[in-house]
Image 1 (cartoon, rainbow, N blue to C red):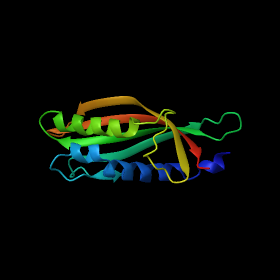
Image 2 (image 1 turned 60 degrees about the horizontal axis):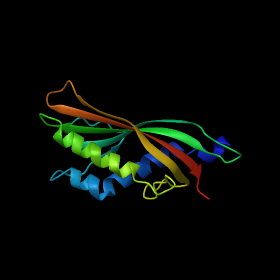
Image 3 (image 1 turned 30 degrees about the vertical axis):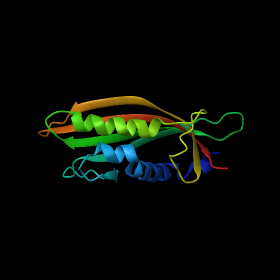
Image 4 (image 1 turned 90 degrees about the vertical axis):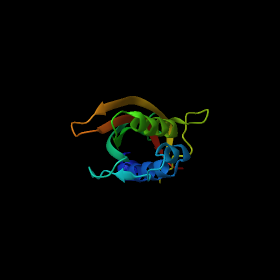
Length: 149
């Protein structure tokens, strides 16, 4: 059954990047700054930015229906004296990834070849980075994926 999920990590990274960059609330949260969503690159010169990060996947098949659970980490990086912008962007990302229909499906988050059948936030954390005036937000989301029909 693992064959159905061979490209899930890559598809998720691409889908998250597009969804976050195009989501109206995420765009608004950046204010007058350019919206920057980076897939894994660690460019410490670009602020503010959203960075898709680490993923973990494990089997979640039930009753012969192939499925995978995945935890995806999203990083928010800002340069500011407080946390206002970092938390505003984090809240917008949280809203973009937790809006679901009655069945818990985020129909706006398109992951090529897969269907997100449930998703929720499991961690929201904001920290000071050792670099001067750099703030770092970390959001972890747990999602269940099934192959698209």
